[in-house]
Length: 374
Image 1 (cartoon, rainbow, N blue to C red):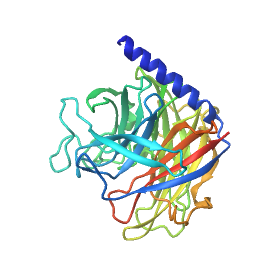
Image 2 (image 1 turned 30 degrees about the horizontal axis):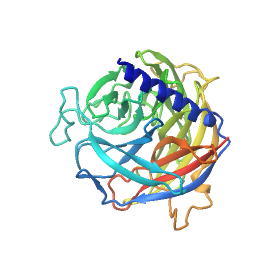
Image 3 (image 1 turned 90 degrees about the horizontal axis):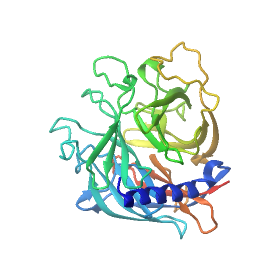
Image 4 (image 1 turned 180 degrees about the vertical axis):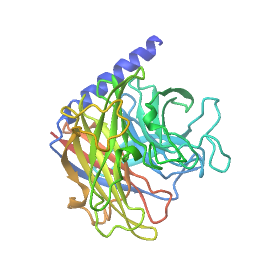
């Protein structure tokens, strides 16, 4: 590693550590404002949509925002840009699109072309601040397992994180991750020495997915940066947030943010099908703790097993925001990304959420900004 990169890494960790010292105990969140992007917005000839994860580099002031486009609208990619929070409602400017590349240097293919089709979901700056880590959920129908990879800032492949075999996708039997319910959340610990990974929902062998009458469990895994699994824990998911939920309704984890070595901010998202392409989204933010939870590493199944799940505390139910239904926030859409931003003028930390519009004209891309109150 060059001296310059070492200095950048030290600066990134210092800035990140300084900024993240405040939200380690989140008392509450104060809503600052929301901004909606046009469903027709384009950057570098790519349609902006499917935004599923975002992260902030405190050294450069740059945000990285990943799209879950499976190379259908344009090659799999992330965006680099700025989010100005000085006026309350976030002012978002996406400066360029960066194509993610396979180990052979080529862009990822789409389903028509075949091959390794990604489903990007979460993105985080490497602790050095000079590279990015991202997840793909895989594809059960094609037998593609989920993965975590590190890419350079120009999108070039760098390395991959080895994950336990329990996460192998099986297209011919109900074992491993359910389709579109795999690697949804990713976050480095504040000091950058470990990486958390969150499943969206339960593995087949860990029991059923959430229903309107019962929750489920999603595995959270903690790795060091040498591929060693440090621990694995069961996060208790809520039930689906409406008794009238139609076909396809669900509840799962859509993102995580590590607060310290054992606590995380967790975004739970319940999508309720109201019929056809009409969906209502119910978003809750929890503080989860693994301090007293059982380490499940090596356990192939949780059905019938005796273990202590993670504990969790509700921080905010977005359904209860007083501003919900106002012209500035007519509704909450499909929140999939969360990232701590820069300090606000009063010294408090900021939090930004982003929604995935699924490239659906009936949905929107929203950026929601909050002040973190200790």
